[in-house]
Every structure is written in C-alpha cells, then in structure tokens.
Length: 191
Image (cartoon, rainbow, N blue to C red; front, side, top):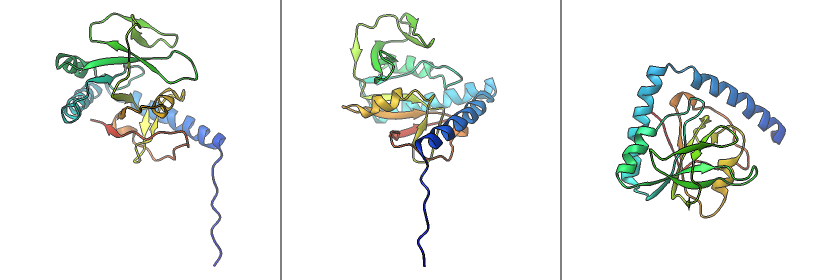
C-alpha cells in the first residue's frame, strides 16, 4: 500500500484563504440586525464579567469597538466599578507588539492613525494580565482571524504572555487552518 501524498499550503495560499475568509466573516458580522447585536453584546458582557469573577485579574487589556465588533463598554463600566484597571491598545510601530495604556470609562480619548480610539494620555503604560481580543472569526482550536495586521499575534508572542480571551459572535465560528504565527486564544467568549 502506498502512502498518501500530503499537500502543504504555501504561505501565499494561506494568506489568500484568510483574506477571503475575513471578507466573508465581516459580511456575516455586518449582517447582524442592530437589535440582535445589542442583545448579543449584553450576553457577551455578562459572560466577560462572569469570566473575570472566576479569574479576577487586576489589569485587563480591552478594546474600543470598531467595524461591528462586540461592544463591551457596559462591561468595562462595571469592571471599573469593581476596581479593575483597564488599558487600551496603542500601535506604536507598524511591525511591533501593541502597547497598552491606562484607561477608565469616561477618560478622554484621541484617535490614532487608523481612526481607532486610544487614551488621550499615553503616559501610563501597563502590562495587562489578560486581554480581551476582538475576533473577526475563530476556529474550534481557538485560532482567531483578525484584520490581518498581526498586532495581537506579535503581542501574544512577547513575554510575559497575558491570558488571551477572544471575543466574537457564534456566527463567526469557521473552519480554517491557522498559520504558523497564529497564537491560539486561551478562551473564546461569545453570546
């Protein structure tokens, strides 16, 4: 009996596949009706708070929602009331890991070069113990698809590695192969 020949995808094929997958997942996410999205965001927020109660980290990296990402600002407000120090990510260099700076709900925000909200004051850099990471999509192995910039992959490759909590909608669960640089999330939280 002859062995089967296994074909390994090239990095170009993997990146093309992820580009097509990303477009499909973004279309699915954008198609969620506003009322349903709001309900799901509340459910995800409740699950994030329950996760934090089981894993009470002092410093949590969060994200400001863009492009129809789950909006967890209600959870951020509740966590801040419970004494959690939050930090928003900032791109300091294009090919570097993200930096995180102290932020609390109500603090003044600025926009970075990508149009993403960041703390207006970037004087207090923090090393979050855990990160809430928005997912364009994810697979059953907790590999996430993002926007393709690699910022979170580089951030999670650095030591010390924070816990990585992917945030997404169930409808963005997809079957795809990860690339060698993809770092699995420790957990995925959905509605």
